[in-house]
Amino acid sequence: MNKLSYGLLSFLSTEPLTGYDLMLKLNQIWNTTHSAIYPLLAELEEKKYVAYTIIGQNSKPDKKVYEITKAGREVLRTWIASPTDEAVRKDEMMLKIYCMQGLDKLTMDNLLDEMEARYRAQLEKYTRSLEKIIASNNNRFDSYNSSKFGTFVILQKVICDIKTGISWCKWLRSLCNKASAIDCSKDSFESFEELMENYQVSSIGKS
Amino acid sequence: MNKLSYGLLSFLSTEPLTGYDLMLKLNQIWNTTHSAIYPLLAELEEKKYVAYTIIGQNSKPDKKVYEITKAGREVLRTWIASPTDEAVRKDEMMLKIYCMQGLDKLTMDNLLDEMEARYRAQLEKYTRSLEKIIASNNNRFDSYNSSKFGTFVILQKVICDIKTGISWCKWLRSLCNKASAIDCSKDSFESFEELMENYQVSSIGKS
DNA sequence: GGAGGCATGTAAACCGTTACATGATTCC
DNA sequence: GGAATCATGTAACGGTTTACATGCCTCC
Image 1 (cartoon, rainbow over the protein chains, first blue to last red):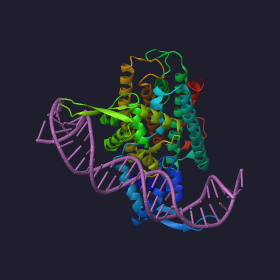
Image 2: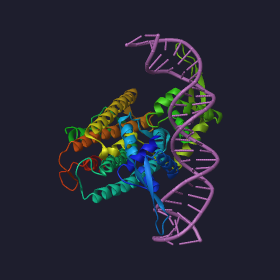
Image 3: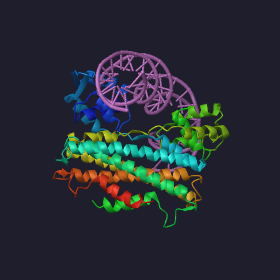
Image 4: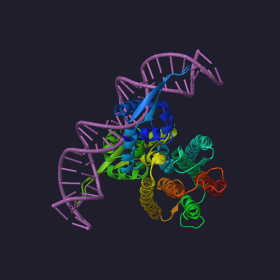
């Protein structure tokens, strides 16, 4: 049972899904491919943590719709109570940004353009996902036990992270365009970090 | 030349470092282990992209301090101009949060506690790193071409992401403690996403 | 005495991605 | 006609992690 196996069980815990659906949904928060998913689903089925039903479709290939079993939910519960590993992050763009001191203005501008465009594409994609989730739930959740509530709160975070990314791109671009030196001790310095701090303390810190 | 190899060259582009140092620094933005780094450094040395000097230390093991070569910088430049892959994210905690609909209050509270504690530990660690960078640069950067400027701007983003995480934990906890239903269409709904949006449009969007 | 940090390295096991493979339909 | 979407699967390769291996120093 590797982490992706638990990821599959997690997503099956709220609704029955095909391997293909699992790939699409999981990819929103956990990078993976269908080639990794199909063999794991077969293993989970052998272990009786999931069961599938074959649905024949006309004009589309047959599909296997997987459901989690009681044994599967039990394994999930054990995993959730066990220690959690740190998040894995590997962002090639950040490595390139690290090199900025050695880059000419044009290359730097191109990098920032590419980065901001990517964030904007992601923002549109995830915003649409969130709108769908909210609409399919008729604009309300009875409690955190509602189905789709997990997706709802995760999408909120993902979207905020992307927006932070876009703001950061803008902030970085303005710093690169500056003719004068950057004085970090000066009060007027537009520190990205400080801006965020002011916001968060005043708006959420109190709750 | 895989991505980690370029990561090593990136970090060597600003200062000479040992394999051990590279592991510590890279880990701030790119999860890896020393076992992956040492063989790659040997390969980079064979290809003449890096060169090392052995430094004998008393009371500590000898170390190999690596420097990037002209050929290495050339490869870096080519890589930076080439297409960039999407970031890889694998966060086990998010998978567990996805399952929240099936969790009892106690398990949920424990998860949120664990998550917030982790974010706070990260915040302290990265804040210290940032302070060191700023202090070692005497509170100023002449331009984006300054050494350490890459680390400076990346740390700002990392810290903001962590702070967003902490705020999100608080927001989520308040939602879980709510007795009444959550109405997303209502004006008074504390949408995490909307809060962030208001902030970012007013403070940075204009620049 | 044991744990942890500094410092390097190898080997095996495991995991993940890419490419191969198939096939019908829809859209440009 | 070609590309994209739905839908499943396997095989080979490459990458990553864990464990093994060493050794000295410092701090508790």
